[in-house]
Image 1 (cartoon, rainbow, N blue to C red):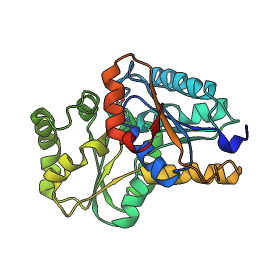
Image 2 (image 1 turned 180 degrees about the vertical axis):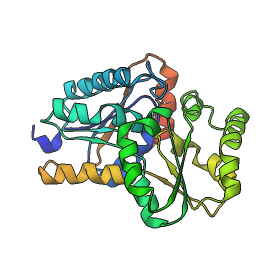
Image 3 (image 1 turned 90 degrees about the vertical axis):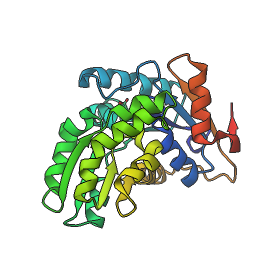
Length: 263
Ligand code: DGL
């Protein structure tokens, strides 16, 4: 089999990376995808960095074992803890990691009020701090950990009053000050974008890193001439480390798999 025909692997601690898979399917409809959610170990955002690195490596090894041509780490937390280490260790395969969309937010709103959200780990790690040093002179950047969202999304409770209360408590003070942009720096957050929108109002631009990450994944494939050029509709396979069947059903629903071939 030609490398071009091999699938692309996408991993996350759970369901969040489906927001990246969705974008990958939109931009590369001809590709086959294997999505791996580490449902047995979610959430990552409350764990020690060494542990996240080890868990992420297990996911990467699983995907390599499945014969993927490229891996997208669709988890900001895993990227900050493990991407550099994994790229060095598995140098034969392109590994792309999602990061909070700080740069596009600042470029679109120079001098504006920008709120960057993510898990505690993402906002604390060196990778993020280095980026912040570059952009904090160009806008008024504030940080807000919102790791509590992850559990709600994993349990299919994105519409619960408890989540609404959590979002109100954490985001209302920022909304009152007026936000030009809010960055969803965790791949679980796009699944509660509408709930966030209700709190911050219509004039705040809400950005996430999915499209930028997928475009980078495409560039890496094109550079190697590994992009699939066949005129076909690709497939999506969703796998997990846990054994909860309901998780898979939720994942398929969230990804909109009914339009595609799911094995
Ligand atoms: N979806 C992940 C991210 O983008 C993290 C969720 C978790 O805490 O496991 O950061």
